[in-house]
Length: 155
Length: 83
Image 1 (cartoon, helix red, strand yellow):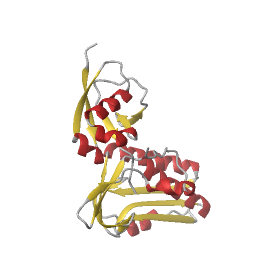
Image 2 (cartoon, helix red, strand yellow):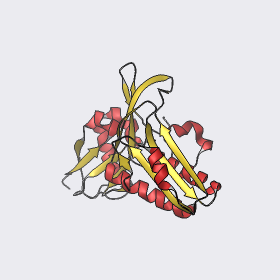
Image 3 (cartoon, one colour):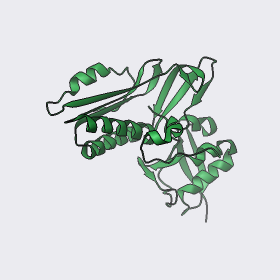
Image 4 (cartoon, one colour):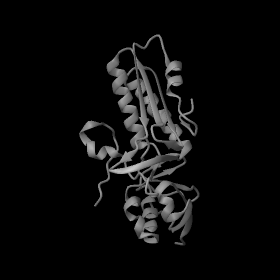
């Protein structure tokens, strides 16, 4: 399965195709584009990736999560190119026998993808300026998530 | 020892400082961290983001302490900001 795409993400279709008779719990996360960030009005985002490596890393994260959380299925697709406000930028779906594994695995996958995979967000603002995301926003919510990467703090 | 040129591919915010591709001169046997040091000299404005970059070679991350392979391009990976 492709993990990166330049066209709109149809998570309803992905969800419909996802069903598995062994899964009593299916969790879908959709990361969507907000119209604001850190007090600034956002018009849209553009995503760029080091594509072969990003694809490979997402595949590895999914395989690891499947084994670690005993999932029946897991998918993750990330958008590249322009995504407008309320557009879906990334979708993660996890299916397991029970909800605990499906929830935990979903969180684990999205955190790892956001923080470790070479994908970058370029934010465009209403004042005509733009800015590359330099780091994940989770640095301000350090206790709310788990992943292995190190947060670089501004010196 | 004569310095050799190594090709560096840049992504995202790094292109503002170095374009999509650049080269640096390094001595054979130097580690990947030397490439970062050289780039900081070329453009000191990029020093902060360079300090948080990772380096990938052949689609795998390498340790900064590792001796670099001169014949293989380096992919300079700024902090991820997907999602």
